[in-house]
Image (cartoon, rainbow, N blue to C red; front, top):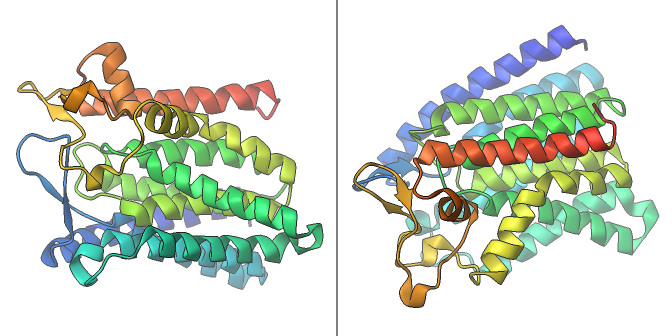
Length: 323
């Protein structure tokens, strides 16, 4: 398959995702699967779990690639991200369909089982230790992607940037990996048509886990431990937010479990840091930027975050000679 064919396939994935997201928005609202947009004035409710609507376009492309090559790696990749997406959608919709929320231990066990199975298939010859490390790599990328979110377009845009950077890394190693990156980028951009400011849908855990596991899966299919380790450098902003801002500076808590909204919207529409009890700010990347620059509009914060992710990715690509 040449560049023209993969471009046509990517366009098809983009269009399918745009349509599926529109259908999901109506479906979710009709069934009360909505969440509060924290960064808007008033009570703005958006459809939840929009990440799951990325699957039809992705599977359309996987089927096309598989029937054209007979390569089961495409199917394995699709199954990995689909299982992560369904684990996420269970959490996204727990308040609507489950009498009791799925505990974090059960979610962790399910994710660990999937990661170990996928890692075992591709690295069984390296022994238990490497299988465990590769499984931890998948879970880590998915988790960092899951926590690096909070405003319209934040997660999707940063993920698209990293997917482009990832494509540049694997371009010399595997055309198949480049095709999967193109498919993922197209699906993310299709989702962003509805998630960019002002958003109509949230990605939910289904979207963040899908994208994170998809990126990790592409590097695993490439089979190079060194490239997998290198890819972690793209997630330094994510690691900084989670390990430093959330764990060290503010004892990370799930915003959805807090009574206080994570952002304060001023009369002019700009976002500020809310007043926390005892002055204990629950930091994230957005609040760090607000602390540095003062109150900002939502799209300004997201644009700066995208720029940080892009500069970080470009720096490592240039430093190691990938571009």
